[in-house]
Image 1 (cartoon, rainbow, N blue to C red):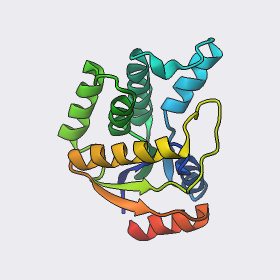
Image 2 (image 1 turned 90 degrees about the horizontal axis):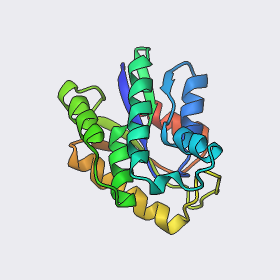
Image 3 (image 1 turned 180 degrees about the vertical axis):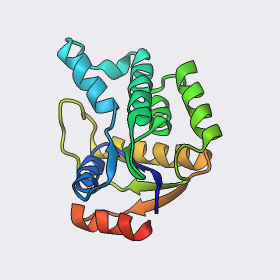
Image 4 (image 1 turned 135 degrees about the horizontal axis):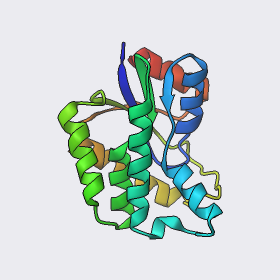
Length: 175
């Protein structure tokens, strides 16, 4: 099958490892933006960039740049603007005009396939400089992601906990 597929889920669920394996398997992939925005802001001395409502717009801008530059018949996107909407909701930030415009464009153009791969939490969280969320908050955030995608009419295809190889095999079977 060809198309642009989103991989979503809570921080620490293992999305990036799955995307890396899909890339190794020859699929076109699009990097997550939020982690890179956080890393850049932290390098600039901002310890918790997610506390600034402008953080959401920086993610949207980078996501847009990356998605428009992507090529390949079958693409896997590590998150999307719909994830950014879930993040804004989770953080208590309003949905900015830029975010609303991006979501409207994505919806109008049917940019992504309506089937989204929802990578479920593994049951533990490995903290990083960018990921400072505990398991209980990650579970709440996972639920926000699920509600957000369903509200936009996406069909969620669960990718259950397991090895990276098993998760990629499940995605390939679902294609």
